[in-house]
Image (cartoon, rainbow, N blue to C red; front, side, top):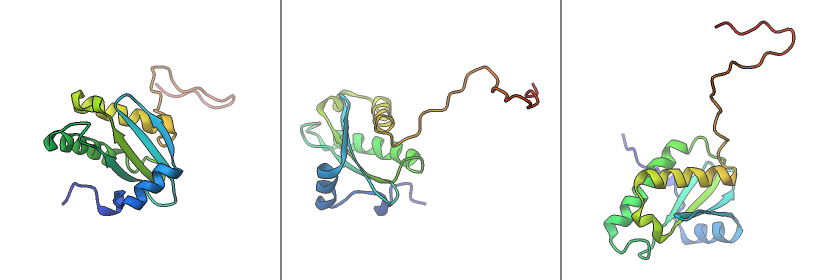
Length: 135
């Protein structure tokens, strides 16, 4: 079984990137910026990692690999549309966890991910007339 992103989950053509840049909403972070264009098809990812980010291909590929893996885990939770991440030079010095956190944070700020569920230690509130929750 291939664990990679299928072609249908990628923004691939220049015209698709241009459309997302022209019509999409933008959110930024010190490590990357997110361009998101809502659509009616499931979430697709495009990555722009230039040589300014890292002159070595191995470094650019590491960044893309980490972000694709995180996108695979979030894909079913994301709102429909095309997502393009444009990495910045600060991403070269960042570890994988920092890249994942920045990406998830951008998705949440854009409204593409639901807010995190609040755990807590208090039991759920009861409506009047409902029996109290059992311990």
